[in-house]
Length: 137
Ligand SMILES: [Zn+2]
Ligand SMILES: [Zn+2]
Image 1: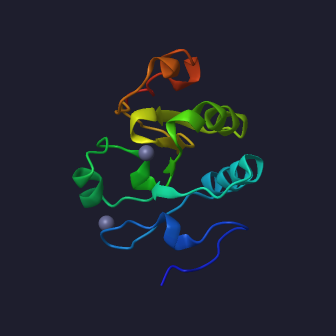
Image 2 (image 1 turned 180 degrees about the vertical axis):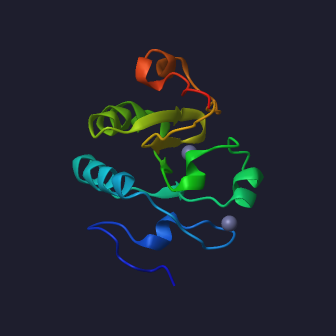
């Protein structure tokens, strides 16, 4: 149903919630992702896009995760490629959280009223001031 091309390289169904197939995607996020896809030069596999409340709980997402608002995506990236990937992701303006042990990177476009971020945040994250925990609402 969501097999609709929404940009040069992405289909809507790539962002849908796996439990209910509902989908929400922020336009800014989509265009940043498209830019990243082009400079990265390889397909980007979305492992988690939009999440409904129920699915977000199931995967242990933060209570006010940006995935709930279509403002975050997780992309499969091998640990050894994450350094380069993060550089490019930041270049196009994403906020990033690497999960090297789990071979994915969380990308988001921020938002108001955010709470803490969770995950196996590595030291290199805390070295980047723009990646420090968002303002609690
Ligand atoms: Zn769902
Ligand atoms: Zn995420």
